[in-house]
Length: 423
Ligand SMILES: [Zn+2]
Image 1 (cartoon, protein in one colour):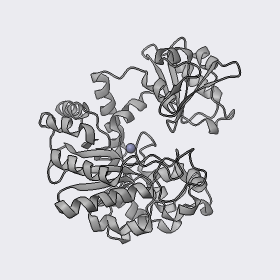
Image 2: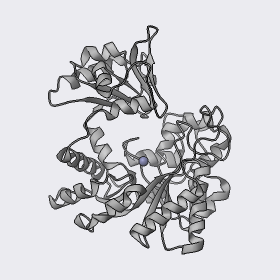
Image 3: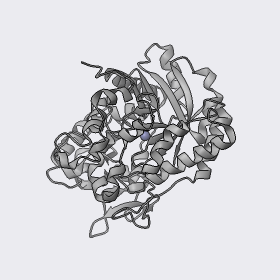
Image 4: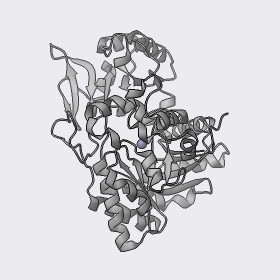
């Protein structure tokens, strides 16, 4: 079974952080932080998975409340979607964040009525506090990679595609393979900007089990933040961004394909993050333009996410030989955002049935993944979403484009296996 979209190192790192995803109240959150602070092995206390709206108090802890339980350790509590966070005084100071600072991109340091920082941080400010914690050293990184792959292997995955590979990941995987503790085969996709550097040293670590497959680009933002690039306007758009935010033009996509081809030659792959229908179309247009000059076999392109696809573009995937790399599990978290922001485009969300009907092959040119650690890696989540198009507890009327639902056997085939692997 194959996990086609994972972030191996950050998954492993998040497994060692304090996990707040099971918390039901502010009190439980503070208890978890206190337990973490009593572990003398920990430096920075990084806690992830906070879903404050689901807590009984429905509010973030105040800075004094976190200070009160963290014994002078720097502490940052990150929301599950990585767009907001809460930090204690020591972390704010270590990160150089002061009340009223504006920190790009879009960062806000919230203050109370007296102008003092509350510890609550948005966007760029949240990232700045989070990234102020020291990067793990080499042996810690290797441990993160090892434990991530072990966890994925326990879920039944034999191979994993890493979707934004760090320059150190290949060498780390090579070392893990030499130690005979490599739990899954890995395909690496490095950012196109560092692909040349990564490829330059690949002879030192590539093997039959660890391979550099290509480059990764970001063509737009995300649906939850309303920055996915859309062909039509969002209902209730982000300020100044009626159709979201295209990060690359068609010409930029062609240039990225050119770079991948220059480094990898025929057979190199480009993985393009494109969530909105305008971004998906930009990638398909770029592939078409490239193929006119260079032929169809010169480069393989896969579109990551493709959460909204216009009807006119569905057939172009198979026609151009483009792979759809989908994460149906995201639907489970995005139901509310989709219904609120794109009520007029719900019929275009993850048109899996149409994509298969147009000629994409499950497990080959239409593949499933999770995007772990953004969401958990359990394949059952994507099976549920691909078959029922909603969360388990929701009524049938909440399903998003239920006519695009597929049967369970086909859904497992998109993970590259014949049926539920653990039965
Ligand atoms: Zn991702």
